[in-house]
Image 1 (cartoon, rainbow, N blue to C red):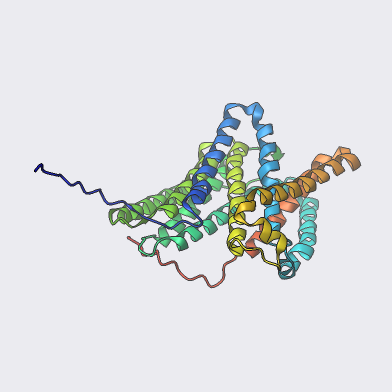
Image 2 (cartoon, rainbow, N blue to C red):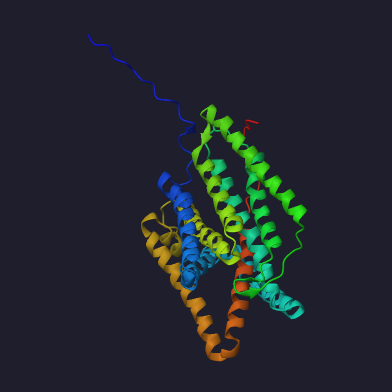
Length: 354
């Protein structure tokens, strides 16, 4: 009888599970979105003449759509509208007054300046919120260091916006912009802190991997976060092209996440109290959901653009800029309210290996 050698497979560093919806959906949310964003940036760098086309595609297919996605949580059913009535009716007037007041007091440069810093914070906070979801979904046996994850997640973007402030490009998105003062010594200090935080985070991953207790979705997501922010803020010198990478990533990520949230909310059942949104949020209706949001965003934004060109052709560009910023600022405030999770219990997967 011949000898039969039995080989034992090496233990995996990753635990099974930990996905938000499914492995396919989550990998698209993490990897595919990252690749698309980097591809947009690479094309814009390689063929500068195509930047305007890429920007229009980003705004039309993703940017406008992602703002409208917010309203699926505000006005697509009566209960949500009643709950968020202030955000839908009163808040826009407050944002409009604040925006025009800022322009009147400081000039148009205040809009791209406020946008530059507010979108940095908004993108970082959105990423943090998604990271928390992956953390809570991690297997109970997984080792995830909350301290290391949070430090690295926040300090890398902070160093990125600090570098942009130090770089002080005279224009951003083709507009005059101002920057917060950034001494070189402070920049170096933030860089050391960010690098140390990433090193600390990697150390906790290695310790968890040795025990075979890594959560792959959470780990992969944080890697994608760091790749995008390092590329958008540090590796690409052109501030607008760097912003494009971050913006495509943020917009696509948000559209997918909101659809997943709505789909999870209705659990593949039509709710008679929210017939429109619950029908559109079924798994089989994802194309219809996207088309409805896309149609609404196209009608709103292109009507505004056409109306300005017809009524005030000499001021159409400025009017479009101000309106876009108002919609963005309103979106930022709304997001900071509707996505707050109260009384969150610490994830079971938060035993630090450090």
